[in-house]
Each structure stands twice: as C-alpha cells, then as structure tokens.
Image (cartoon, rainbow over all chains, first blue to last red; front, top):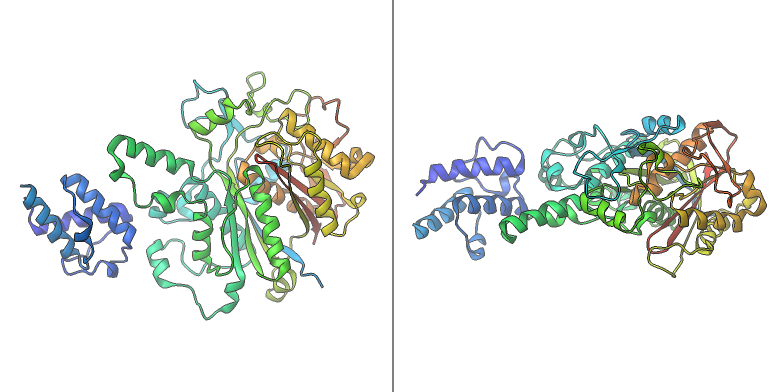
Length: 83
Length: 429
C-alpha cells in the first residue's frame, strides 16, 4: 500500500517522463488542465501508472478527474481493493 | 487575369544535406547519398543499400515530446517546412521550443483573417512506418493496453501538416494526399491549383518519406524493385537511363516549398525564386504497379502542364525526369517525353536527381522540384551520375557534369505506383 505522498511523487515522475518536462510545484490540489497536460497525455500517464502498479482503473472512474489528488485517490482505492 | 504562383521559399532534408544549400552543392558536384544500410540487420534482405539522412537533430525543430510521438517522416517534414517558411519570411506564431500543449492552448491570432488564406499540403507516401512498427511490437509483447494513446496522432499521415499549421498559424486549407512516388509533385500541383483558383494566398507544399525499415525494404526487395550495389559500390546502384539499370534505391528526406500568389508576395516584400506556371495530372488506369509501357498517361500529364502554362514544348530548356532507374519506368518515361518533344528531345538537357539521392518516394517530387528551382535561380544544371552507357534505345542529352545554362522554362515529371502521373512547368523569376 502506498500513501498519498508516494503516489504524488509517482505521478510527478511518470508525468515528467511522458510529457518530457519537470513538474516541480505539483500538489494534490493542482488542477490537471492548469498543468498544461492534455487528455491524451493524461491517458498515457494513467496507463503507465496502471502498468507499474499492476492495477486497472475503470474508465468510469476517470470521468470526473480534475485534480492530481483525484487521480491519486482513485489509484489508492484500486490498490486497496487489490490488497 | 490568372493568379500567378510564385515560389518564395524552399526547404530540404536529404541524404546529401539537411538544408537546401548543402544538398544543392552536393547535387551540382555529382555526389551520391547512397550507402550500406546501417540501422538494422540486412543479411536476409535482397538489397542492403539505401540513401539515409545523417546527423539530423529533430530537437532543433520539435519539443522532446513531439520527437517521441511523431515518426521520422514528420520530423523531416517540419524541418523542411521551417527552412522554407524562414526563407519566405514567415515566422512561427509559437515558439518551436515550447511544448505542443502550450502551443495548442495559446491559439493563433484569430483576428488576423488573412491566415484563413494560408494553407498546408505536406504529404507522405507511406506515413510513419517506424511508429507502426514500434507500437505493433509493443502490443505483441505486452498486449493492446500497452499501445500509446499517441499512436493515432503519431501515425496519421497528416500529422506533419497539422503540426506545421499549428506552429505557423496556417488556418486555410490543410491536409495531406498520397499517390506513392508522385505524392510530392501532386502536393505542389494541387497547392498551385488552390492559389490559382483563389482559395489560398500561401500554401506550404511538399512531400516527405522515412520508410527505410526492415519490412519495407523486404517488401520492395521481394517485389524485385530494388537496385543492388554495383561491383560492391552502393553509390553506383542508382543509374537512370543506363543500359545496366536494374532497380531503384530507397531514400528518405523531405522537400517543402512556400507557394504564394505573386502580388501577395510582392506586397510583403518576399522575393520569388521561380514560378509554377503549369501542372497536369493523369492516371494510367492499367496496372497497380507497372507503368503503362507506351508512356501515354505521363505524356498527357506533361502536355496538359504545358498547355496550362501556355508554353510551346520547343521552349523547354531542361527536363527533370522521374527516372527511378528501373528498366520499365525509365523506358516508359522516355517514350512519354518523345511523344511531347519529338526529335528535339535529344537536344534538351536532362538529368536525374535520383541518380544521386535515390528514390525518396513521397518526398521525391518535392525535393526534385526544388532542384529545378535552384537551377532556375542559379542558372546551372546538376549532373546525372552513373551513366556509363546510355541505353541504346534512348536518344537523350543527359547532363554528365554540372553545367551553366541560360534557362527560362523547365519541366518536372513524376509517376507512381497506382499509375499516378503529374508534371509541372516552372519558370525563372
């Protein structure tokens, strides 16, 4: 089980790899679109997090993602249900 | 009065140089860009040679993320367009160093309504073969969920046109077309048509290819279309019009031209390098890959181009042929030229750019047209190399070393798999 801080770090690492730029000031409250991350980039970030954590987030869970925290909480829920 | 189509910028990425000046000097000096394929194992292939672009830095033109998403053909297209647009004096509306997300969110200055009359037709014959190969390998190894969400924008053949349009705020007609080896020439002809008809004032037009991959070389090779090194020398493989020609050499690169309505160019202070005064397009409609043996379709394309330019064939001073170095293609083309020029064909200087650059497929027509533009601008012709013995069936005045000329009108021909023919008439500025 990973805590939220660990998931936030993971998000920053994966986002930097996918979008080829650093995300130093991202918090759980950061709005994803404000970070300049477009929808396809977000899908690739989520896909890479799913692969490395060996989880699958249902599409309906992705509909209301607004902040980075929203994503991290969805990922956390999946990890708990797997555990 | 007919709207006149000027060429106000040109850009090239090629195995003979990653800009127009370097490529043109190497063409004038008769250098070959053909070499052994070094990027993948060739031991099971029928041909192990190609003309490859070297020392190309895609990150000069695209963000690191764009470099990853898009295929090599798109990298080349954007680079060639950047050179052409810079020469034409048209600056990007977005910083190329900025990420595409930033560019997309900024938007172009929509108050500038003139931009709805600036378009783009940068095409490719084969598309992003490299991205297809990568993503299919990913899916095979790790399942379809591993396929990138960027796979589709990465492989769509219009990705280069889309990237260029965003970067330069080209809000008029933009798309890409495909007609195999005629793609680049068709893109120029179609863009000229759009400017003549009044639908656009500026068109970024051209073609590109970067399809030298294991499976494409296998496909062309198994079709017995590719040339092999001659006496172990790859540079001698592409030999248009030679008695011993035996196939074409795969090449890669891009050519882009800025076509612009003459008065529009003059008002902005852009200098015309040459003019596109005629174009003609026909189809053999006989066989998928074999050119019509009598050359009638190609001859009609050239006749239409000359008619559109209101130019007597007798005034043509230089021919840049399709000339891929295949036995059938060159023979059909010479018959086509003979139908249009008659006995005088044997006196008109002709030189095959593919003898040095190989066959750039969708990029060929564009880069070769730029070679003609350079000839009209500099009043000098590049040679055709590897002509050890002219095919005895041909009567041609092949340029064998660089030659100064007094050149006003030149023609460019292209023909492609599918039976697609296109001819252009170009005039000195």
